[in-house]
Amino acid sequence: MTSNDTPRDPHPYVGMWVTADGFIRQELLPNGRYDEARGKRQSAYTGRYTVTGNHIDYVDDTGFTATGDVRDGVLFHEHLVLYRVGDERGRDGGIRSGG
Image (cartoon, rainbow, N blue to C red; front, side, top):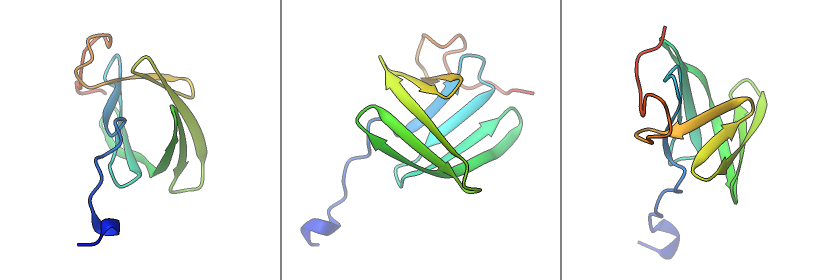
């Protein structure tokens, strides 16, 4: 295995982020892709993302772009506020089924 083949630790933002009501669930995958569910609709939006500092640039698979910023462990994604799954600051503190 060469140094270019050495696996890297995933970015600290990788993982599941949810709105306080659990309706929107955005998973940042370690391969630079994301998968966003809304209510009962799985994979409502999918695409790729890049992280620069605390800033995230999103490009969904249709070409639509969006941005986000992580401040104090909270993801502000356009008009959404998302928390890491299990973060007590989110009202539900995790995933619940939405309608």
